[in-house]
Length: 266
Image (cartoon, rainbow, N blue to C red; front, side):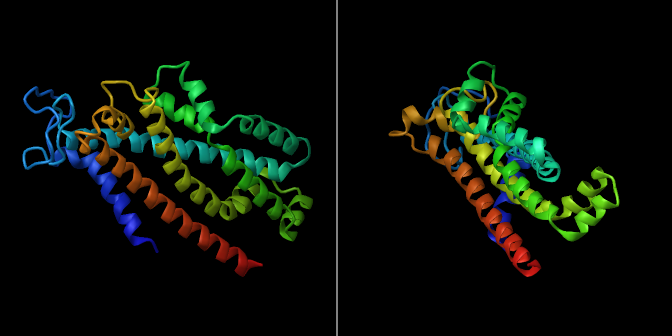
């Protein structure tokens, strides 16, 4: 059990969504007398080039980054679950249409597709969640489809189909419990991927628009002063690393448990 990774994630969520109640510094307050101050007792993580407290901005930015990450992964994984299970269950022309649709999306590299879509829209939390979800469901859908094919060859599923049991009931009662572990593994991978995607877009100036902030925009704001103020980029980068690293550890653990369960079943 990756206890350490779970504790790190729990800390980061509490830090982002409840940290402002403990550390009440305004993340938007400008101070011309405190520009690029290094970490100290007055400013625990230093200040940026406009004199804003970096710790307060990380707390505020974490809310945006984690909301986009969790929201995008939740929607993308759900889309993948629905489309993949439908394609794997109905097969035939439905499956062919699914394969064509996935191939169309995979024709373009995901990040370049993100860039193309964001460049025509004003980025916001909701817009980024929708765009990242639209470009991130294919991997989950393909995994779910493959597992659905496998389930469809089970004897009890064939009996249920012969007995003309409702297809919706079969999908919800018999497919869903088996597909759930794959969904959760894809979801945990998706959160880290969505945060990295948002950070990459923000680093290129196509992500969250000021005055809103995310860990990606804070990281981007420090790239011009990294030689004289390393802390401006280091700490938001550390936050992104901790989230993605912890989620990868948890995903690997869930995947191992799922594989062990499959081996025991076979």
